[in-house]
Image (cartoon, rainbow, N blue to C red; front, top):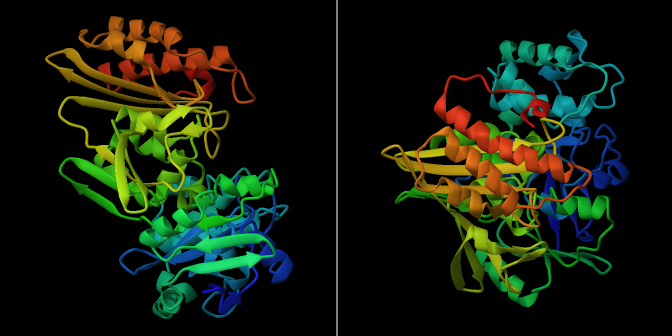
Length: 484
């Protein structure tokens, strides 16, 4: 197939000239003149470009999620329903209830960010009509507003949620028809080009394996929460690009192991994290903003090899393994072995991350995950830590401590672990582990943090773990500046 097909509001779009680097935001504003969707940061940070993306799940259900149009590459829109602010309407054809609530509660001042905020709240209103203030704040993590201070926006969200009316919404009434139209667009490989700028969309994972053998140097694009910035900020040529965000969505829990397909997004994994790894639920909710969590995938967060990726420290601490695939051949490796050095991973030409295998914690396991960043929400990590310790009869039987932001790769702290092993589960062991970190890491200074800050923070996170575990009721929710 040589057509990109998707629904845009109430219109079916079919395009033959599409390049790998073409963005949804440019298409909306420049080609379709749907200018309610704004360009602010062009890096998925401010939320002014938020639209809804409707897609079919593995079981055939249609779900709508807020995403950032500025870093959503056009090829990722295949067989989806893109909904912009212009499509919103109330039952009488006037303002949508979310829009009216924003008017009634004075939730807009300069107005630039307002369409993106409305779309995020629309997504929340549809999926969680009884959302409280905490859920609303989480939904707005990826929307920056410099005018209102958010209080009137939250009041608007609470009011419209309490008012109900979701069953009368256009997207609810049209859901079956839209799902059928999207289903008809799926099923075969799509090859697109604009000049020499090529985009390829495999039909399924087997097709991806075959395609990567044909194009071993291709750029793999999942949620584009990183690759999108290569295009918008660095003007990099990513062609040919293979778009895989619709693939590898399996989530299986059996035989003491969680198996996550590489294409599972942070949002899709969140219920599983809350159920099986509740100690990491708050950490998980701080990965990007809601829009980023709806697009970004766990496999891509690992595969790009970033030393400050959010998931590797936690997953390494848990003893996760990777399934790598090339053609029909598969191999398993420990996640920590995947990262060789900065910019280099154990992945051969034509090979891709297919799944992540995570052992479930056992009796006596104590788990924690921490993220330190300049801004609490929707910010890039300065230091991240994953800690998994097993205590048996009062002594530390095993210890896995992994850190991000402390070296050229996410890495375990071998000397700190050695300081803990066999020791009584008591403060002196953790003090010794904190001191041993100086032998494990010599962090760098960059725009996010100084080397001294990172070293101090990492040491204090070990101390924080001990305090939380020894006195579970101790109030440790400090401002990030105090954590260091």
